[in-house]
Amino acid sequence: MASGVQVDDQVKDIISDMKVVKSDADANERIRIVVLEIKEGFIKVENVFREKDLSGENDIFRFFLNQLDKDKCRYLLYDCHFETKESSRKEELVFVMWAPETAPIKSKMQYASSKDSLKKVLTGIKHELQMNDLSDYGTRDQFAAKISKNVIKVEGHDV
Image (cartoon, rainbow, N blue to C red; front, side, top):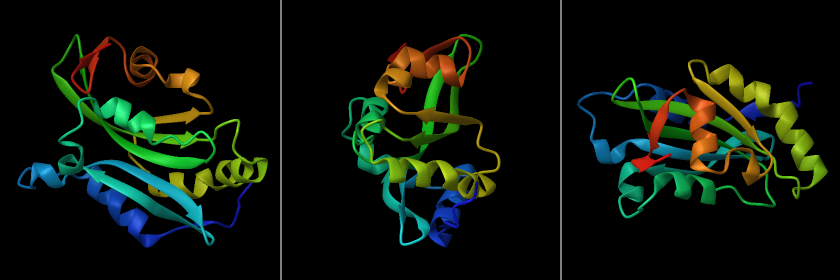
């Protein structure tokens, strides 16, 4: 079911920037977390957190979880850094639809029906999660199990 909500051009540009990380780019400018909201008939950027914004954070995974408001639906793009037993460090994009049980039903329906519009511009995103409560994937080990096998660290912290 389509909602008629369109994806704002700024969202498309940010997704493109997140998918293509240039080797000569300034690492501090790298986009790590994007919070998207539905506003005025468009999926728009609410917040962008770059590497430099997170430099003082001890745990970027916890910071990501703190963006999940218990009363508001949102979409999030998360550039997750993790390590597996088999390889060294991996960096993969995770798309999250956050629709908490405590959010208004109209909002939950709008986000669910608008997800396909956003997914059309999310080609190449490796992981997609739907979260309704932090018990879904709100611990490091649950999240790690969902994104890959044999994950030993997420954002530098042991699973």
